[in-house]
Image 1 (tube, one colour):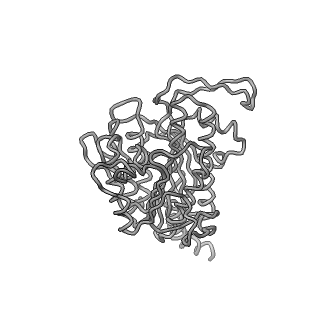
Image 2 (tube, rainbow, N blue to C red):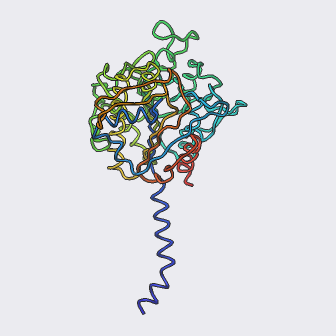
Length: 374
């Protein structure tokens, strides 16, 4: 009798289990971390030096092929567009196709399809190529004043980084049209700041949300802490992890979830300069971001964390004689980008979609599918 009952209900139980599994594979929140210029050698140098690196915690890993629509060697605008939209474009374009067709970004889809909050954090100006690919649509990454205008009207909930000069008129900034974009954002309800922690009456601890005191948690914020890029890692009083915690404190207030893009921008700058000590410093700063994201995801259990790069920079290779890498030597093929594959990691619901070798736009497509519930 019991066997007959089990046979009768087995299809229903399987259907329920499958539905539960499918539901679990769709994250409520997505954190995408991009190490600009971070190839496998840059990552190797970091993990060899930082023995307890949080990179070891990712259960899913793979590689991304970074070519653009018109070149074997991409640059950050096209590389980030592939991740932001699931479409490859020509070098220099930001979330526009090769025929200047606007491409829907992950952040736009998150708002339109699921009503999610959105955020961008970067150690460059937020008008720089990678963050701009998630916030604007222009045919040249050099149009940073136009990019700032689009960011100001984009509806993004949280933006943290540098780039004040592109938002403010002279003499405080460099805009020549007299437009104060930050005043316009303040009028629309944004908390506009030049420091990560305001230290005033609005400051509060967000331990329950982020596991650390993160300062003010205004629902909509733009925090621009430099005229252009931020100081190098090690030359500022806050880490990229601190920046993420402030962003998360705001984004978790949306019950529908959020999508957050975080860029360790200056890994690329250190590699362009062939500066291994600074590369170590920038990778350590990126590690703080990794820790903040993984800690949040482990507590939340509904957050997907994806880590990758837009391209490799410098053609770095490593040699040495000691097994622990203590005598590591860096050899640079040049001071520009290369076409080498870059690492890819994933943790949390939906992470199994990211194992193996992918074209860069396939990563964007998979993220878009998760946002759209597919």
